[in-house]
Length: 320
Image 1 (cartoon, rainbow, N blue to C red):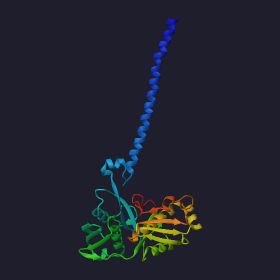
Image 2 (cartoon, rainbow, N blue to C red; image 1 turned 90 degrees about the vertical axis):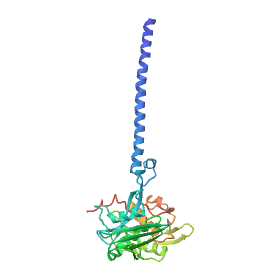
Image 3 (tube, helix red, strand yellow; image 1 turned 60 degrees about the vertical axis):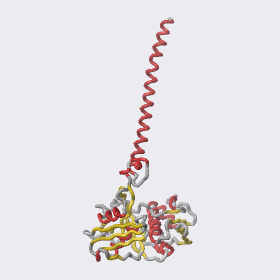
Image 4 (tube, rainbow, N blue to C red; image 1 turned 135 degrees about the vertical axis):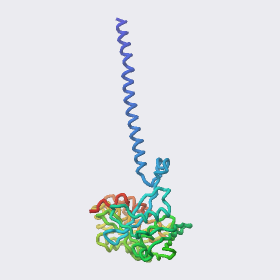
């Protein structure tokens, strides 16, 4: 009996390691799967984050991208369309910026190159904060109003350029005196730059609040008023305190994405027109949100020029 019980005890003891080993293996496989998914997700996110300083991008320099802004024409009208494009960082130079402009927009995005075909660049020079570019081509064609705006706006978007000079075969091209005011084309989900005239930031803010001349574009509701205004010369922060009216709240409720894009256009308008303005602080009578929480991250904090105005990869989605 004792021998029999001992045999059974030995049998149970012998089978226990097998069951335990199977459970351990399953746990090990599950742990490995979870780790694999986490690492895979991290790598995938790093791969698609253009212009970022993610760990993977720092490990693999060829993945690094720098955003640039190019200005093209609208095939459906006279608007000027800012296009955000990511260049490999070894190509993101003033020369690369000009080359990208001459190459024109991507096919199928509803834009046209305003620089005449056959135009070439003969010199690109950045000395300190002074950017100079010389083109070869037809002077009269390059001096057309919309083309000049596209050329100067593109070059002025270069972050290190405070002054811009353009020549055509050595002859100076006059910079336009009008400013760019960015309104929103909701059906096509793009910001469109219209020309406007203002002597100072206050006048420009008032001009924006009047709304676009083109009925196809939208801005803030026209009953929004500018309550107070101030520019801090020490840090270039422009503070705009505006009224929070029912129409603004309803606009945010009905068009939550549109109100964000309109504010992006407002910020771009104010930060690119005058050198004394580097950032904008938007305050609608102390409200931290518009509508039901919209744009909380854009209100009552300093906002720089949006890095992406119209992402070229997303343009053309709504073209017929």
